[in-house]
Image (cartoon, rainbow, N blue to C red):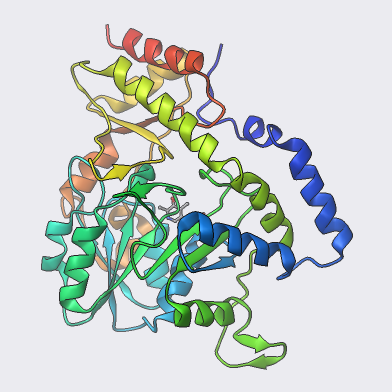
Amino acid sequence: MAIPFLDLKAINLEQAAELEDAFHRVLNSGWYVLGKEVEAFEHEFSSYCEAEHTIGVANGLDAIFLILKAYGIGPGDEVIVPSNTYIATWLAASHCGAIPVPVEPDEQTYNIDPLKIEAAITPRTKAIIAVHLYGQPADMDAINAVAQRHGLKVIEDAAQAHGALYKGRRVGSLGDAAAFSFYPGKNLGAIGDGGAVTTNDAKLAESIRVYRNYGSRVKYHNEVLGFNSRLDELQAALLRVKLSALDGGNATRAKIARLYSEKLAGIQGIVLPFVLDSANPVWHLYVICIDKRDALQKLLANLGVGTMIHYPIPPHLQPSYAALGYKLGDFPIAERIHQQVLSLPMGPTMSVRDAQQVTDAVKASFV
Ligand SMILES: *Cc1c(COP(=O)(O)O)cnc(C)c1O
């Protein structure tokens, strides 16, 4: 029996009746953009994230971008980003006209190494974007301390970490502002695109509300050069349903992760995920590290186990970033990680039996 990497259909069908109700509620309301559903979702997500404000936007990339924009970051500025991340983190800085300045990860957590940030700071640096990669919170106290010394903004890219805890506190309110994605495959996923900014900074929240809606507070009065980046009523209504299942889904992911870590412990050549004492990850991905990654991926595919690579090419080696002039060897830790990581099947509808089949297949591939 095949184990898919992620079964999105099964996840959404678990809440089919409630999702259909939400759809009909929006259909019959006759109001489809910036209304009651978005407002209700923003309130509910704020309390979930222990943040004062949520602003629903079109996607996760826009969420990061709009935070930078609203903080006035633009041409001539630099933004510290992880060398080991999904390219969206970098693109948000680039699309503001700023330059993304990569910093290498900690070799155990794969998240940005706070000890390496200071060396990358220049008089032009305005902000640090910390990514909670794979659902594991970055070391926010250490990052905030560096930022404070240099007067920098701290932005969480929480696109993979809905519900994760750092020292008992939810991600989303650990820096100046946080960006979330509701892309269907995320821990909290819409049935389409969606995103949000969370923050305790009332001024920033107000500014992003203006920017997301054509730069206007009052219809047809445009204060700034705004954008169209709104979470729509339908996705908001669906996300309210999905939010009610987030903690349950994260608990299942944690159970599967525990089982993986138990069953795969001690296999020569496989490095399992490392979790900081201060962190409760939400296991967006369960990522192992292995030398002969491509060979293992093929063997697992032959045994019916779906895996993915997050990510195969680091941003600094992408053709889209050729203009920054980086070459192979410039960020060796990120490069090694990109060559060795493999994400095992993970999701809120996986059973213990599924997970057992995965670990059996990994072991079988190792004899
Ligand atoms: C998914 C993701 C994003 C972008 O989210 P979209 O909604 O696809 O724009 C940004 N950062 C990280 C780390 C992500 O995983």
